[in-house]
Length: 174
Image (cartoon, rainbow, N blue to C red; front, side, top):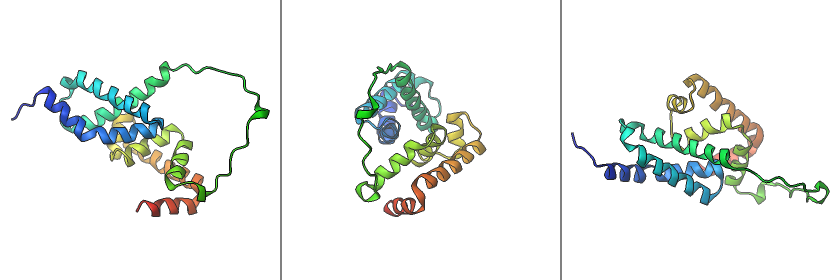
């Protein structure tokens, strides 16, 4: 059995999962700098706890869970300033025709409208490539509960996008 040094194990993790973690972080926060910070903090925590990782097969789930928790910590610490803004001065939203938006924008908006309970399992499956059992382990749910949430997430996306727009998005990505 080959014993890897801590540095080489860490380097392998970074090379293998940094792109996936960044993509997931971007879906969570929709801000490049924040996503980069989340990935950096995730790998910092991974470095500190690398000795606790016994099964290399669990590394991806471990890193995704760490990133999700880091994202949650951002909002635990964040205190938003409140300001009174007169609503009569607010502009009406611009028209949202399909022609003026890309498929990615349409899909992002629809995903943003999903409740986190549905969005997170869907993103873990689509972006992370996790099975229902793996998602269940990460979120503390049974595989059946995950399948239910995935079904409902897709159903809600269909309701938000409509069949025509969903078909356009699917065709663009196939």
